[in-house]
Image: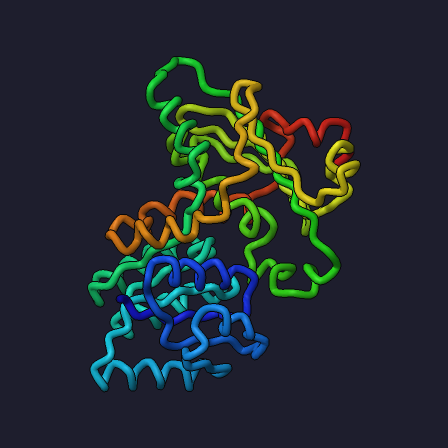
Length: 314
């Protein structure tokens, strides 16, 4: 049995990590969150020590270590801008890190974390769950097994409606979240580079707090993408069903069905990490670079636009 700690226990994604620890037959010794609404712990690890202050949590982890209790992993479910610091804390405590996406906000943060890995001998893992989704694995195999001189034509659309709370929370602060493309798009960009190779071109056609769109060209694909948290962007047939999320990927006009199959991907991720097959810094770096460029480069009208942008006035 492996010993875990979790930072960000009150967050939205934390229950998936808690479930994954439980499903893999391990335990959580300590949990941290500045918010104390963590009744969810009763459903998983009610005997875990809980802290609302980082300093006391850090002291407790150090005490465990000195008393001979080995902390094996720290699961990090905190706001994006805190990932870097919490990863460093995990490794310096003698544990491996399991960090939610995005691993960090900037490419140079990845390089710095590589130094910490080398110094401590511990490993940084990140959750890139789309690489484990059956439909995405099938698409990768299809691309690998059918070499072609012509690049695939890909359209990516993801609209996940968010309420007024979003702008007030850390997610609405670009300095903390990295902005819309980082918040809801980074795992898609990872998927694209995993399947279609390295990025050759990255153009941004629209960037605003609630939506962004652009064009990416990879070794094997040309991708038009659109991301939004604005429910007004939902297609009519989705609104009529009173659904608040629309997810679509077409490859050469063929829809890739992956609307289901997400429930157990965190558990599957943990299983692979525990076997030593987790995704690390090298796997995360490309998507971190993509979203950093999207966040910082100038808007352009060059490159092919996503169909949702047609008719827009910029």
